[in-house]
Amino acid sequence: MTDIAPFHVMALLARAKELEAAGRSIIHMEIGEPDFPTAEPIVAAGQRALAAGHTRYTAAAGLPELRQTISDHYRERYGIEIPAQRILITPGASGALQLATAALINPGDRVLLADPGYPCNRHFVRLVEGRATGVPVGPETGYQLTAELVERHWDEQTTAVLLASPANPTGTAIAPEALAAIVATIEARGGRLIMDEIYHGLIYGAPVQTALAYSDQVLVVNSFSKYYGMTGWRLGWLVAPEDLVGTVEKLAQNLFLAASTPAQHAALAAFTPAAAAIFEARRREFLARRDFLLPALRELGFRIPVTPDGAFYLYADCGRFTDDSHGFALRLLEETGVAITPGIDFGGHLPHRHVRFAYTNAIPQLAEGVERLRRAL
Image (cartoon, rainbow, N blue to C red; front, side, top):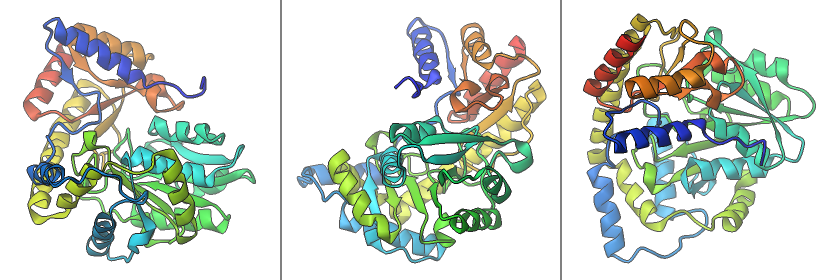
């Protein structure tokens, strides 16, 4: 438990809430949660499910209709066939990551991850007694692992690589040809890839392909939280290789039994044309926010050498202003009412000189935040 760190940003968020309760105006750029409410077609489907009495357990693997709908989604969007029986519905992407790490990792096994990266990934590895090895990455590789880095850091204790594309906190994606090379490198060494694709859909022009296009041995994690805007519904999915389907289903039965039944019925509406139109409008809005905030922060003196391909984050080098990003974030909150996330949450590679901005607020609020930062800096 001492190895599993809390989210430092949550303490910062709690302080921001205290200041708000005391009457201060706070511009929130710290939390990676879309500010849009769940799309109306999904809410209506959830209400119909409740009214119809869909409140009992489903099978551990999830609603057959939802699993088939996701299978259809892979065929329509990516041009690949993923049998519905390989898709398991989970309580958020976190439930899927727990299944994947528990199914693959024995005590002492090494798992390679990009550093900086989403902190819970290394903690899932630690929870099952694996050893998460952060590989330092920077702008020269788009803050992503490469086939060459995987090859260089692989050893006989390494069994898996856990990647995210687009990634949190950097928003960068892995190009299709680079991802294919990574998959081939891992499989040539007898390992497995766990691929976090929860920000697929929130892509701003870069070519992106699912890792499932390159192998049927990868484990892909996805979520209804980010692109589909269903954070509080707690719903995600795992695509497992055929040989692991029975294992992860058994784990699901024991760890959480099943995902929320009303949420699963509601999620069926996420794949309708009406919902898709809403998601596309929101994607364009996130793109507009990125294109506003990125040059504004650069003008203030933050170094952001790579333009994010997706998600809703900017990972900024704040070394011009401080060598203590945590203290810097706290000071900005107290003095300006602008809440951002210090790099300490995302790993051990230069966390003291990086902060993350989440553009999960409307442009007028972002503009006010930039102006406050301009005056303070």
